[in-house]
Image 1 (cartoon, rainbow, N blue to C red):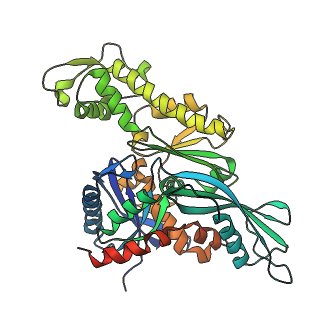
Image 2: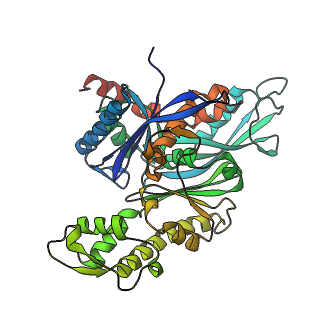
Image 3: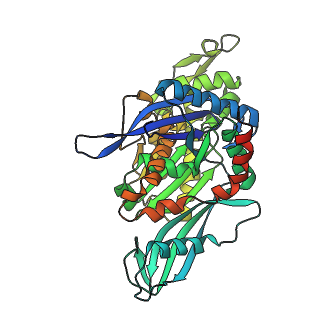
Length: 420
């Protein structure tokens, strides 16, 4: 019998990442997720979280899956796939139902009906629902109920967050994945999966902001009292640092990328004024010397700009500088030298670098902040498959899946017939 594995696929603008996990017993007798494979390959055909060239995107995903199969020695047939991009929007919705039983006891099916009622929200043209996330329930006017199953009441209401994405972008992503011969377990809004991996339930209760700095977008999600308070995808990322350096140093993008990776920092005051970089050593056609302090000034300015955008999102919900558990930075852009200091100064919050918690691994890459979304997708998959053991909260994770099955049932049939 083949052992059960969980696969997370994160299709980004800079790289496609695959994480493979399986449950292993621990010394305490409980099971823990063990990451047995983590792969990153350069991405093409993807920009700002959306597919811009289908064939290129298919070959990038194929390469990543093949490498993951080689590393783990296991066939990969299906995956939990992250979706990201500026087209994703979130809106609040409330579902209201009457409890059907004569004794007034609320059952799982009542909760599911309430969540289904919350789905009947006016979606913008061409948008599809990705997730319906229950935040809290109201039983006969009593607010703040986290799990109403077993309670008594006549009227059950649920406050939920509806995450929606542009139908065409969802179809393009699913098409790219199906063309590789991989099945999709479900689509998951990437930043929510990242949060599964990098913050604890305690931090979500206190109030925390997770910031995933990708190549061309930065995704933000804010939790408080265990609920999602706000989410946004900002159109800035670490590629903007590269572009700024290319313009400021009057050099090519490739050289600017090497300058960013090897010398950039968000702390200009730490760099001696006389320190210089020879761009010829990084691929420039001739000797050209630039000051490291100047490079740091450009990098710091863009980092501050990114966090000012994040702070604007926090101001929208009156949480600017007011989250006790602070901020958590993840994504490839979070590896930039000195970025934590820039974040602390701009956001006025305690900020830490986020890497996967609650998982074990012998692979160094599993601690890489850029792998946190792929590992989060593995954990998300485990939560959904393992809802039976989640103390009555199964309905929450089961209902988090959105209209994905509706969207892709036709696509599945089509691409199964032409799989390579």
